[in-house]
Image (cartoon, rainbow over all chains, first blue to last red; front, side, top):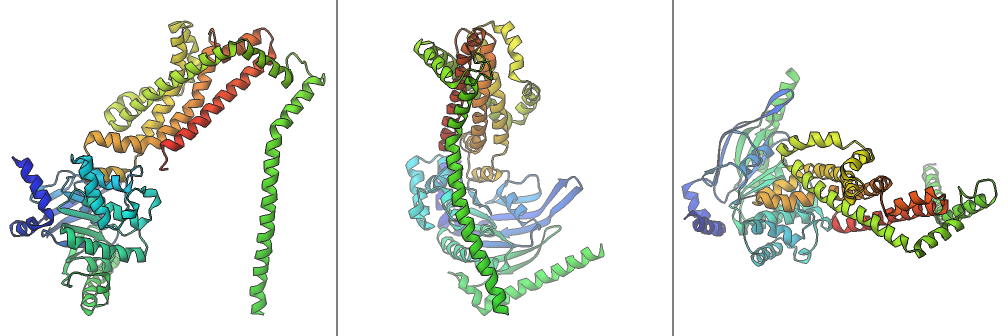
Length: 286
Length: 274
């Protein structure tokens, strides 16, 4: 009974279902999440009682210094990191492993080097039991969406870093995920490519309407992209502040020139500076 | 003064660059010339030394005598039979040993339980030179083909097993995580991601095993055979036909060389994305 219904739900993920679900429950609920790593120097608390909700269709950016556990939080939501303490519900179901309605884009593209662009993107649908022709049709749509039609039959090692990451995004979208997790996907790209990729993602996001959690250490990137920014502190990872970004959509990276943007950035920087100072004084004292 | 200071190094760099370029072109031509002369020079020197009377010509025959011995060997029809026998042993042993090595390498690389069961045993057996098994192989198999195949399989297996095992363990974790997030089931993960991800290592192991299969062949045929390149070398030695001994060595070297080159070309096609 649940089989056909869930597949319908998946198909509608991009349209009215997310609006309807918005009234019922958040897409992601993280409650009192703690993650402790065992190292040979004892236990290290990577993430300390982090709680936040993400509404369906919302675009949330998590910013923080390197080592603050933001990627760990993301991997945990993805079901890649075990064990953890606390509760994580994605689309109402507790996380106990990777699942098809949660897509992920990593800092490195991690494309299958032996597969063409098209077959990389078709991999997910194929694994979910779609026929070769169906998977190819899905892949071709996404290839057009990320503007790589000329490169559909190219292999990853012939593409630039930005193009590879576009393929990785298309590949993650091929299973029509309700939740898309992005772990510093533009972190390895140069500044120009990164700005273009941000604009691409903003345009893409208006079409797919998936819930997105995007991890970055770049405060500008976070404000340009997000509906809401979560600022994290390091050692142990905690959420310092939530900043709602009420900049108009559709948006592009040129929003960075608006006074409203600068005011938001100042708010964020104040929080980060205060925390940096606190951490510095603490390490000085110890 | 400032101008002079900036001009001088520029000139220096330019002259330096030009002379270096001319030097490297001359150097390259010389290298090619010497390379082309290497073998004729060596063979000519060998001919001279052999015929000079300074050495015993029976024990150290000149290249011309070796060539005649080889032609004789081919004309008698024995050469084809010997070549076929040796190639059959190498190829069959390589295929069986390689297949077993890949299979068990994937199992031990992927499943920790199987690895804890088998790896200690394999690590103890692996360093024993395959040639040391000749006596026990004769006890077990006599002079049959099975014993010869056993030696080649033994030599090939451990090399391929180890490189496959390492290859499977070194598959990019990022690829596996990406595949997991795309809903790749266990079986497909093994076939599509792990096996292909480990392929570059497997191919290196197989290429090393090509030369190993040839030297275990030598041990196998010396242990007693009725045909084969190395068998013929041994017979020729007993008859003091040094020319044929040397011809056999050359044939063995050539076989091994061609096999290695063919395999390298094949490997490049199989893991073209590297």
